Image (cartoon, rainbow, N blue to C red; front, side, top):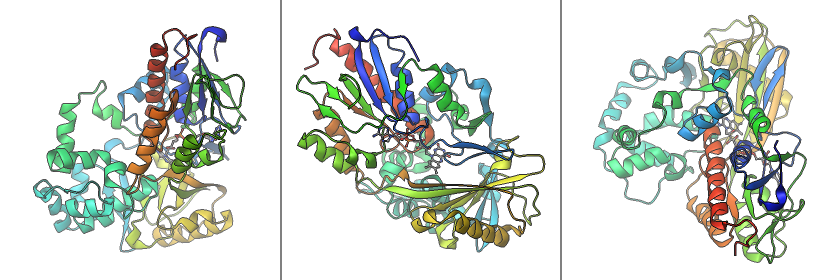
Length: 471
Ligand SMILES: Cc1cc2nc3c(=O)[nH]c(=O)nc-3n(C[C@H](O)[C@H](O)[C@H](O)COP(=O)(O)OP(=O)(O)OC[C@H]3O[C@@H](n4cnc5c(N)ncnc54)[C@H](O)[C@@H]3O)c2cc1C
């Protein structure tokens, strides 16, 4: 954390110390004309990121892994000197995933060759992928992912490929998630090129990237887990970072500055707090601000729990290797998916041990996310026995419930988009960033924070003389 001469600087408050808030504060901290305070309500920086070490196992009870995805995110990784700490998912592009079909795990390799040789989908379903470019594009303003995918790729591919992949990523339900907002690349490809497959190839040529697409797609973590990223953002940030400081009010003063309840007023505020927590923030009788924040706070989040099971040794019918195992809704299993932490990143398990993360809940079975640890362990052991023949009891157990885990970009999300636009247009100096706005993944949250920071930098430039009122 850096030097300060706050009397002559524009003052910026960042609410929330998750990846979006830390990225925004890190970027803003580079601007010598700003004084930046970040307020995090808990004792933990990094938000959902929950790398855990226990009994010689290293595992994640929040996000499992990430990719850089956007040039700006790779820039941050390089700026933080984290390239040498990156670790890559074992197996690279040809990593296999197990997807349950007719009660049995079926192997699918995440490469074109692997896909076509897999027994997961019938010949007819695979053929329908070749016909996708010839299907008519939807002429509605939005569709559920279920309807969109079934129209483009057919029912079987939707049920056994799109459904488990999407449920595994955001815990939502295909029948309510919006294709336009939850799958924007596929939706835009269809809208502009008339085909998801052709459009996605075309997009690559149209928008040249700074880094090779392969590098941005690679699944990565860091040598000590994902926590390395927030820890390094904190360590190298020039912003002032305050833990155990919940922002309880967001009040627009008569001079156009913001009172966030801590220290003197701020010229600009970036809120990265999850939308549901905005309901608890007082607006000091500003009814329009109250109305818009309350509206935003009704955005729904999926409930997901993660159970880690560590075994010293197991005997299983099918090796627990590759990415993990996903459960399509049609298979009616009691879990969403599993990741095999041992084989995803090397060196995270004691010699000979096996680590499995089991995901429970999501849109299809939200009550499962509320199971007690003992109930979750019993359920997971039953599934591991039935699917893989594992009888051994785990020696290490850890459990984390995220009852409001991932914001759902459902049909009707444009209403929330309009509220966010109205908030930023009607209230000068107020900005929003986070996984409810620019995408749900780790790289999306980081980029969202960086975008908000750039907008604050522009705001500061427009202000010209920091002493001058912005209104
Ligand atoms: C179970 C799970 C698994 C996931 N797996 C992956 C994955 O494998 N790969 C991937 O790319 N993404 C994954 N994600 C998504 C990714 O982790 C998140 O989208 C991202 O970390 C969100 O960052 P954020 O900063 O937007 O929000 P958060 O991490 O939620 O941070 C918000 C912060 O704001 C603080 N806060 C709230 N209210 C206040 C207040 N009033 N005052 C001060 N502070 C406040 C909170 O305490 C919190 O620290 C997963 C998410 C979950 C839940």
